[in-house]
Image 1 (cartoon, chains in turn red, brown):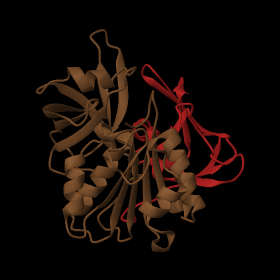
Image 2: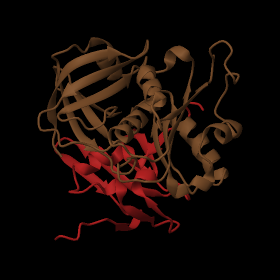
Image 3: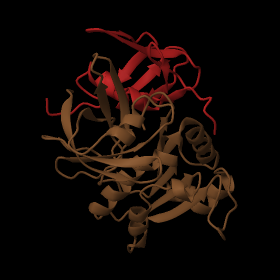
Length: 92
Length: 243
């Protein structure tokens, strides 16, 4: 138990992602483009000591998601995720 | 999701370094136990800082309680921990996060494991469990540096006194009260075996604390045979993330 760990969980990105998406995407399953592992985004590693947020796969460490905010702008790079599986209500 | 203006209606010290902030948030939509909010502070020059804090309270109208641990080198927590007064306004956004949550329709046993101020969202779960009259067995292992670091002790002990209430175990890492049954030390496999639900009960485990603590405990739980899908974690770090 030391402070050398520099990552958190995907949970911690929920607020910033909720500004962009209409639903909470941290509860979605996402498949890693690197190794194929599927994980709930809330449970991936999230690095916050960067100019933005960087989510990485727990298995292979590949970058899944990058989110950078600037004045009046956001840049969202999702190339590390091949698919997102979201729970959707059936009443639509 | 937009920012709301919350009014500080009460403050209460929980330990030498932690205090609870009681907020009135008009139109608060309610939350699930385990969720957090983002708090945004804006300096006179327009500089803003956003930090995430777990909600300590069960749903109660427009009321939201946060408990903030003051970090010596923090940018936001010293303000919230020392300078904030009743009547001040804070910008908050939430509730946030749908994964590290407990809902009253869950029926499986609940295992809560806290490191330090990681107890805050777990207190929300214990409060919600009690308020809902949920009959699932619930247990908390609370690892903390020393007796004076324990936060919300009176309420945790009250929840533990109830029939079928919370089973509460403290573990001290630096110094324990005189005569304590376990020498001070980190959470280890033996402590988990003694003080948490066995794997056969298939509990959902909620682990919250500093990243290193969560990493250690989650690995021990999975190593003991818990289904990784039933081990939910929330890590917080020194410079960002959920407090």
